Image 1: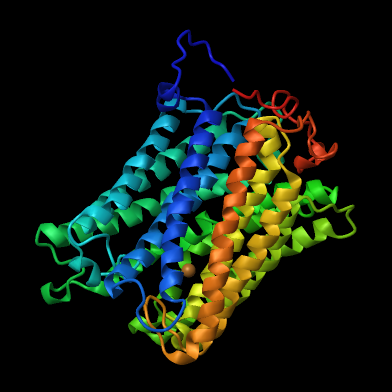
Image 2: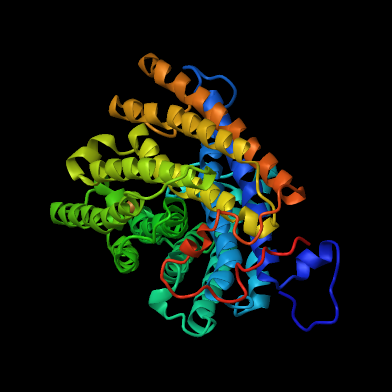
Length: 518
Ligand code: CU
């Protein structure tokens, strides 16, 4: 979408100065792909060390640094920016807007990210190395980190700023720039889920910023917010962190729900079942997500009444989530289904995310969690939610919209290969970790007792299958950008109209023609 500017910078300056939502969407997506491979490589380092008992390749400190940066960068560098990239590409198209409402702010939201990523990545080269002690940054351990601790605090502030500015942009765009006739309850569900996610981000990112700011003053300005010896309380940090951290989990999954709700109707050739209930379920999940945070800290010594409250509140989230899963299944029910790559990743998501949801209910139960906390069961649980939840839907969405974005069809054979190898690699990596956790293997430890050897070997082999498989995705994307069969106006065999979840007509200038390849 060209505006009335006379001057168009070219080369690198085009990308630095761009205010075009498609350009910025692409920047977000490429950035997140790079971060995905960086953080994924760190994960392979972890699995390499855990391939067999004993210390193989690294010091315990290094191992802890790998787990910390793997988590931080996957969450803030890979998953979140990828969804913002989808928001940039799809929201203006889906609501019939010429661009995002605040295009220059949009540019700045993106360019903050490489700054934060540089701070995190270069912490490998400062004295003491990157921070160790987990992406949750718990004190008092966090106080031990050297200069990288401050670099991380600064990075978190920048990432938070980027998220808040991006969210403001998304909310303003959705509220002000919908095509005539597109009422809120006619918006595609991807737009709805991002609308709700943006509010969630604005609500909780400042809380994280507050937590790390208190950490900063504790480290350098003689405050004692989290220092028990000075009258502070390290557990207070956990409360503040998880008040951000649990909604963060939903920030990484609600837009995924939106993507899947676009894809399943297309390949089932039926309108989405229960549109209205989908909207209300999404909103309910967002509200509930803000009142369950202490289920991450049952073992800190809170009153039993608090444990009971957080247990029941957490289990309540299964209700709206169940509504969503039911609606996806009902959409597929008796549909004329075909199984192209986007549909495969979506169905994979529904199956595996539901499994991750079940283990979430298991962990929500206080007496069970007291046994399983800080074990590999927790690691298995959240990877089922985040990898098969967030990551698989990102792949689903990428394959689904690549024809629209590039004007070319991607290589369907390779796409399917990517799906099936991912499915095998992912489950081989993380399913055995349930058993490891149930048997008592603790997380964030570089060595383990002999009885855990077999499942760890399986897990490490799975991780390398899963990791190398992702190179197929890069190849497919590059191949699709460079050429391939023309996608035409309706790449999914005339099923395009079903991308719209309601019978209102598609906005005139969205999917009528494939985007121009620049
Ligand atoms: Cu939680």
